[in-house]
Length: 159
Image 1 (cartoon, rainbow, N blue to C red):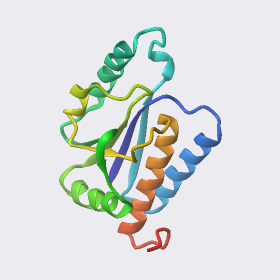
Image 2 (image 1 turned 90 degrees about the horizontal axis):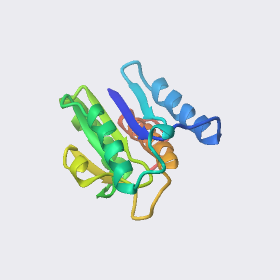
Image 3 (image 1 turned 60 degrees about the horizontal axis):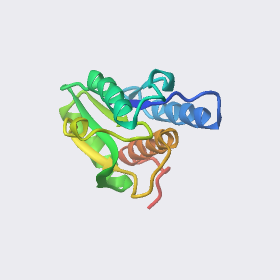
Image 4 (image 1 turned 120 degrees about the vertical axis):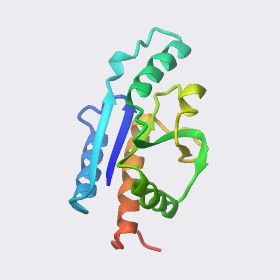
């Protein structure tokens, strides 16, 4: 089971970075057959002086470079399907049998262009409210950890 996260923005030394590292370690401890990659683009590469559309184009080019036909590509976007933790675990169980890797994409503050969303295998949402993309990365890692614990019958997730 190989999981990847492609995200805009680099976490600097902060409580969020500590949480990110903690969840990555937790996921890795659950099994030797679990890998997690955290690929990211530094915020400085996206020109803050450009318009929202220009930033979306620049970010879209980055995401397109990281799309792989061999991977199951999931974009996190407010327009996506909402799913609970059991559905995330089912998604992991089912799709990782067909694909060697599942990759989650988290956009920047301006979201994704519609053209890049159309290239995804699935679009999911973490609710109708807007979340900072840095915090969403931590929330995704927690849900991935929870999903793997559900798959492995670990007591972390209680019914």
